Length: 362
Ligand code: UDP
Image (cartoon, rainbow, N blue to C red; front, side, top):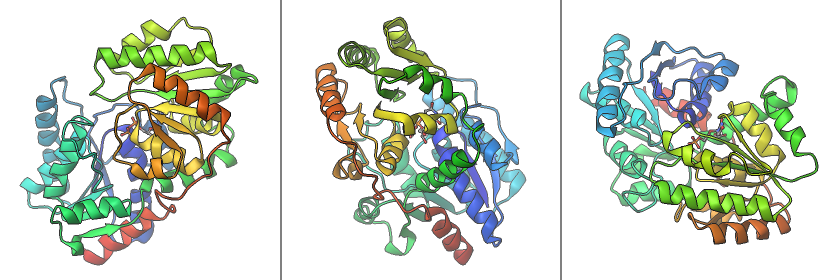
């Protein structure tokens, strides 16, 4: 079994699957790192003591087509070396689609973890909505995190025999990581001075990385964050994703009082900050799931979400890239009690279910 991942969220969400496959002892996992993000997932792999069996180089291109082509080729060569009986991919990244396509070309069955998420709009999020729909056409096993995701797949004609609702493995990762954090003060220690510096000010933790945000959206988001830091007595922490386009956030927010721009944080440090945060502002998918499970209010910097469960649970609120709405909803959330933690995204045993199903079928 070859598990293919290359970006931070995929690595976080597939580490529990590798652990469960290894613990099950029936199907032994091997890990192919596509190189799509060179370092962003390293803290998780180190803590889980997982070293890639295949470490590929990220194709040195910016064009999405060239990236997909390069990854399909490099993952294909890894498949030719490893000859797995099945390939596991996660979510909706270029690595996931390239992994599924490379496996399909070799007639190797594909297991898709976090299958069936749909925004209903092909270009939002872009290119992820299209990528995950294409993976659904290629996969044999569809591991849906929620009832809504399972229903979306059934409505698209996927056979019920091939769809299983298992929960989201991000919750397995979260339980594992929070347990590790409690046991080891040195894990994620880079968050400690950031939290200490906030003093009595409530922490607002923000992340921005979606590709479909153009410069206009990024400027509007920066304006909203600036207004929030100016109007409310908060400390705003922004671990800046290394996308080139995010330079505008650094330009607009770099010298604003009580706004702290930091490098992308390791997973454990980020979770320490989430735990300490009074409010989260983000366009991230995984963070919506984590905030819901941890009971942290979150403003989602998007017009729609493929995770409606987070809205229903009452943790997440859509604000798009509208600075006025951001400020108003942030003020509401800061004045309201913290939401209750919710298990809508899973009970922490999704990976066990996935490993059991794969062991049975293989
Ligand atoms: N995350 C992290 N460090 C950061 C920001 C986020 O480890 O500085 C983690 C976060 O806990 C979550 C995941 O990265 O599990 C989300 O990744 P991202 O927002 O890049 O992608 P998405 O979930 O939107 O696909």
